[in-house]
Image (cartoon, rainbow, N blue to C red; front, side):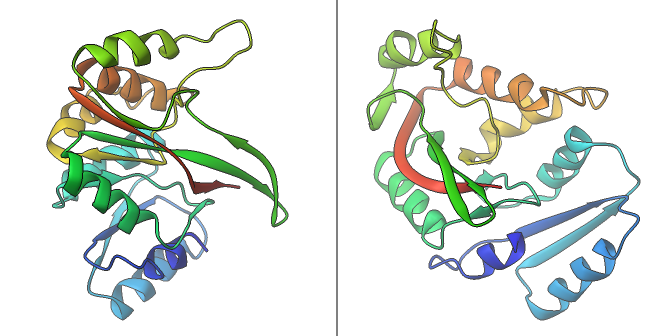
Length: 198
């Protein structure tokens, strides 16, 4: 499951914030069960407000230096956080963007990347190489608009995340990711397929 993929991480100095966004099923109980088993897990229960509202609640409760959003029906590879940590330690970048493996019934059906060479982009390189990829080209290639699958410096992400209107139910990622890229001083693009999109 999604939560288990965090618990199995090779990097262990993390906090996991589970946001129960007014779920009508057993989710609240399941969240509390995980919290009782692991002190690194925090739980927020709130009335249903949608994804933007849930992410807003989560980032307000976060205390780590970086935030990695993970949607409840997806997974990450067991070395994802360690890999991100090592990149951040080496580069001090504001954003680490991973590639995505699209999974259906346990099988990989597609892999998508940011259509950029792997490595660190900073200063003028961002404007030269990343800005043009914020728009789709004629083949619909572009950088990933998903907020999930990126490790982003919390103090940098927070104002952008809090600025997303809770009334937006489609494209809320885009409303946060684009300002992040436009304001970033350093971005690391990784070809590692760390995010398993189900």
